[in-house]
Length: 343
Image (cartoon, rainbow, N blue to C red; front, side, top):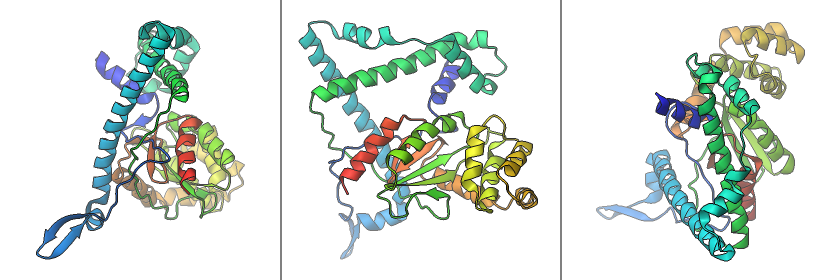
């Protein structure tokens, strides 16, 4: 039971997760990308090429390539980290564990307030267990997360002193924009697609990073939002319908803002109240909601997301490169800057 609870807590640290692990990605701005037109087979005198195969099994191939990329990238990062720590240890004349203790674990602390907030945000996931019972496990998980973040920050400091060059590139997934709500110019060099769930607390936490991206890269980013309400969020589907129904009256983003600002109050009655507050024609809005006008569109978006490997939210794709979970602005910046450098 403890293992199951800890596993759930791990998944909850950055995303609302439903099934399998989401792909993650990172890439160097000067990464080497293999060609896609290579011959793979021959039938009599006809050559079967990579391009032809990708038209048939493109998504499956890319998902397999993402898994391979993840394994390689994680192994590279682990080896780079070990070598950087080894070098720093020799330079300072202290064992690596002491370096980690001084720069990571000694600087990590989890407050009771943080534990309480995490418990309240995810209360319905703990099977009726009280905060006193869950506190040690939550604290351990949050401590682990903070240690990991501080370790990453410390390794990044060491990287700046060294020359680290990645020669592998994350595979790309083609995500159709369709008629999805979008902000930013259509010809922007960066297309940021988000599969999201209006009831997912981690999607809410991702707003700061998304808004900072839109501010810092104004005119350079096209932000596209896709529906991915998870089955265990009872109010999510209707919230997504409400946003689209508001969009029917030209106010999708106004409703979007209302919902993100009130994630704990998105029952149908709440949504009707928000419709009035943003000055929608309430009769038209309620008719749209009761008719299920956008239900099939939302289900199509969910299926589309599943087809490209999305199983939890938020799931981002930056020019087709996956980035999963409520990540900090710096994670977006690294990929976006790499993409812009290739323009």
